[in-house]
Structure formats: C-alpha cells, structure tokens
Image (cartoon, rainbow, N blue to C red; front, top):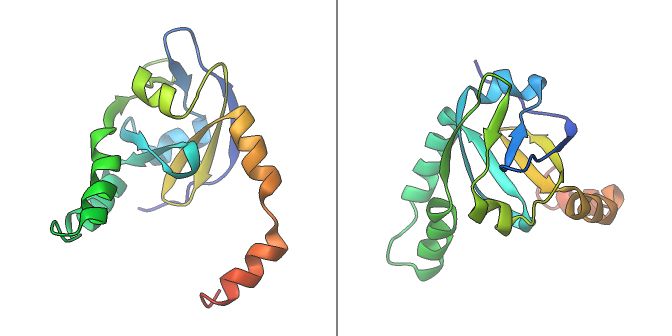
Length: 144
C-alpha cells in the first residue's frame, strides 16, 4: 500500500556518516532503500518500489539525447543501496555527503513519494526562499 511521505525532521549526522531515519518515515520507506543525488543540492531517498518506478522513467528517456543521458548519469552514478540498522540509522556515503554538503545538522523531509535529505543551512535558505503566493500563481499555469 502506498503512503505519502510527509513531515520535516531534524537529526544529527554522526562521525561515521550515519543518520537516524525518523520513525514516522521508516515504516514507509522500508528497511532497504536507495539514496542518490537530488536536485537543488539535496539528496533523494526512494523506497525500492519507488526507485523502480523512477528507474523506469529514466530508462524510457532516449539514449540518443545528450541531456537525457546526462540526467540519467546524474541519478544512477550517485545511487547507493541503504539499509537501516537496529538503531534506526543508515550510512550516507562520503561522496553523497560531500555533494549535499552534509555536516552535523541535517533536515529530512517527506516529499510524497521520496525523502529529501538536506544540510540544515541549505534547507533553511531554501525554505526561506519559498513564497507560496508566487509559486501558486505559477502552478495555476500547470492546472493546479
């Protein structure tokens, strides 16, 4: 059964690069999941089922298109398998920590079918830059 991933959670990255998966998200993302580079400087985490859906969309892109190849490379090359340990933690590889500029303070947010993992500083800047009124006007063009 599909459940929407929601919420905002602050946690600390330990010295080994492990992060606690919030209990409210843990059940829905599963004990094993995929983390990869995300957009806007964060990381994306997908349940195995959602990763398969995303993978199919990337696979359907035309291999003859340079931008499509670059887009696929971006997500596939950085992807890693993750597993939650008995303490509810998972390890984020050093290359992904570097990409997202993760240090001690981290914010994990539920984003419907995926989780986003942000450095606290980047998330605060992103969140501060969100103007719901301005975005609402743009979304109207998309029929929302």
